[in-house]
Every structure is written in structure tokens, then in C-alpha cells.
Length: 146
Image 1 (tube, rainbow, N blue to C red):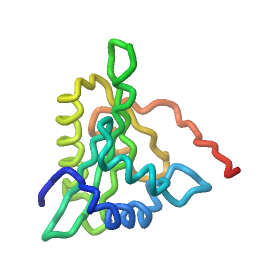
Image 2 (image 1 turned 90 degrees about the vertical axis):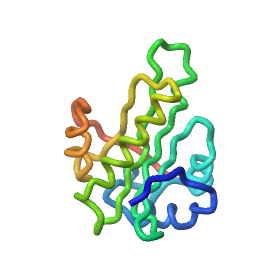
Image 3 (image 1 turned 180 degrees about the vertical axis):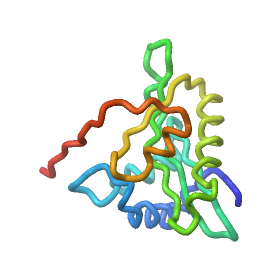
């Protein structure tokens, strides 16, 4: 398995992977992230977007937004937006390798704190607990399509 920086040419395959992984969705009204927003994360200076490949096939990705690092606060925050791994490759360390590399890149950017939004029913909570995240009180994402 190889971890590398995502490129704009990976967009179609990455977007399809995210679109077809419903268990990690936050919104009840949207199937996945807006295409333009997702595409902007691939090249944005405030984003870390890594993918995992096995035998030339994309098997997972992680996306983190370090936009909060631009604030005047002493602590610089980044948000893990997505960790997606194909079901066949789960429980094999793919997410952990993506996470570790992402954290290294965030630290290189001066990030001191990381957080994430997670659906309590998504299956990602045990992963975050293993990574020593403090899990707060469950909150509910509320949204409405206008």
C-alpha cells in the first residue's frame, strides 16, 4: 500500500469513493460534499488531502481542513473532514496510515490541535477513540435544503 498526496486528476475516482460510502455522511439531506468544494480541497493551501493506493487502485482517502490555523489564536486547529476506506480494506491499517501521515503534514503546517465531526452511528467513533480523541457528548447535525 502506498500513501500519497491526492492530485486533481484523482478527482473522479475519489469523489465516487466518497459518494459511495454512505456510512460516513453527516448530512441527512446531501448525499456527499459539493463537487466544487471537494475539488478545491485537492489543491487548497489550507487542506491536507491524501489517498491510499493498492495495486494502482485508490482504496481510501483522508481530507483535513487547516483553515482554522489562520486565526490569531495560540492554538492552531485543523478539522478532519473525511476518512474513507473501501469496505474490503477496512481493519487492515489503511485509515491509521492515512491518519498518521495526515497528522505529520498538519504538524509541519504548524497545527497544534485537531478535531472532527462524526456520526455516532457511522462506525468511526472507535477509530477516533483509538487515536486518543476525547469524545464529547453526542451532538446532532441539523440541516435543511433551501
